[in-house]
Amino acid sequence: MANSRVLVVNNGTLSLPQLRGRFEELGSETDVVRADAVPSGLGGRYQAVVLSGTKVRAYDREFYRPLVDLVMTADVPVFGICGGMQIIAVANGGELAEGPQRVGGFEVQVDTEEPLFTHVKPTVTVFHRHTLYLQKAPAGFRSIGRSEHAPVEFLRSEDGRILGSQAHLEFRKDGLEILRGFAQLYR
Image (tube, rainbow, N blue to C red):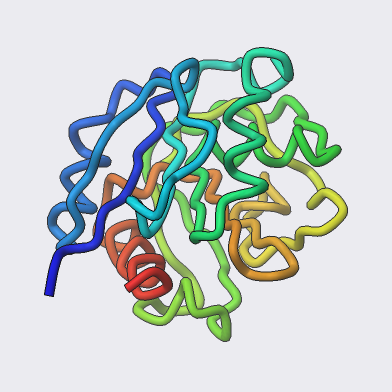
């Protein structure tokens, strides 16, 4: 059986090697494309799309239009991490708010009935490096994880195909286990 293939969209993250490494550790091959060079379609080549974190550009709708079009029309699971989730949320009417700077491991409560959280307990410790937070899930999405400073730590589209995480899941053991849950969605 061939390995699954994941398209990783690099939105300017500093942790691209770690992100790719996590998916490769889970048995998926990865290809990387910059956000300004995403294909218009996947052509059956990929089983999932992952959007990396980014510098604060989530409101640059024109820049991200091709990426958002790909996310919204793809027929595979999509996972936005940090700025990747924020891009998806803003494109769907969500708003970000300034909050306290968080760097390091922070506890988050997750909805364990969600398949994404199959391998974790109701409280996980995930890595943050943030000052902007999604305060409310946009129309067509819902919060599936929350913390003291972020009512939307994890996001899921109503159809379950598009997911997002405020945290950088490429770090810490709980992050890996959440990515393991995502990998089960496309295998």
